[in-house]
Image 1 (cartoon, rainbow, N blue to C red):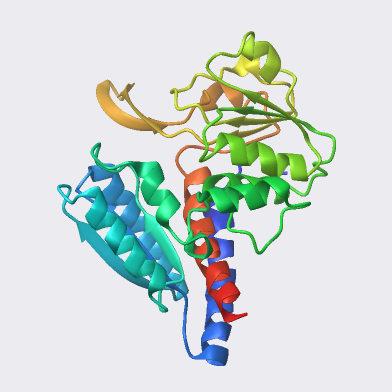
Image 2: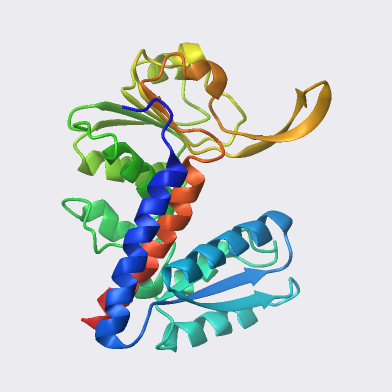
Length: 294
C-alpha cells in the first residue's frame, strides 16, 4: 500500500462518482439535490471552509442556496430561518457553519434542523441511528469527518475485523462517531482523551490510530506501533522556521515527519482528512435527496 494516504485523490474519486450519480438522478427526476449553506458572521476560517464546500457542491451538480447572515442576528431569527429551510422542497441538506457567535446556542440550532436534512449528521436522531444500526448503513446521514476517515481506511483494502483501534478525542463531531463506525467494522476500540493515563502506551498498542485531539504534533513517533495505520484529523496553524524565516504552517496532531518512519500508512496535513470531509458532506446531501424521493 502507499505509505502516504492521498485524501485529495480519494475525495476526487468520490466526487466523480457523485457527479455521475447526480447527473443520472437529474435525467430521471428533472431535479438535483439542494444544499442550504448558512454562515453567520465573517470568521475568516469559516469563510474559507464555506467557499470550498460551495465550490465542490456546484462542481458535482448540487444546487447551493447561500445564506450569509450578520453576526448580530438573534438566535430566534436564525431558528426562524432554519424552520423555513426545513419546509423548502428544493432544500435537501442544511449546513450551518460552525462556530456560531457566542450569543447563539449551537446545540439548539443543530437540534432544530430537520433530521432528514441534516447534512452534517450531527442531529441527535441521526447520532442515535448510527449508534444502534447493525452496520454502516449507506442510507444513514453520518458525521462527515469520521466517515471520510473510514473510507480512507477501507481504501487500503485491509481486513479491519479484530484490529485494535485507538481514537484520541471524544468530541461529538469526530471522536464518538469515529468509535461507532470502527465498532461496526468489528474493531476493538479504545477512546482516549485529555484525562487518559499513560496515553503513549495506549497508542502504542493500536493497529489503527485516529488522532483528533486538536493539539499540534502531540503524537510522536515513539507513540506509534510499528506498521500501524495513522489517520490525522487535526488541523492546527503554527509558526515554524522555514528557510530561515518564521512562517505560518498547517500541521496535524501527529508529528508527521517522524511518524511516517513507523507507520505503514499515514494521512498528511493538509491533503488528508480535510478533502474527505467535504466530499462526505456532498455524499450526505445526495443521500438526503434520494431519501426524499422514496
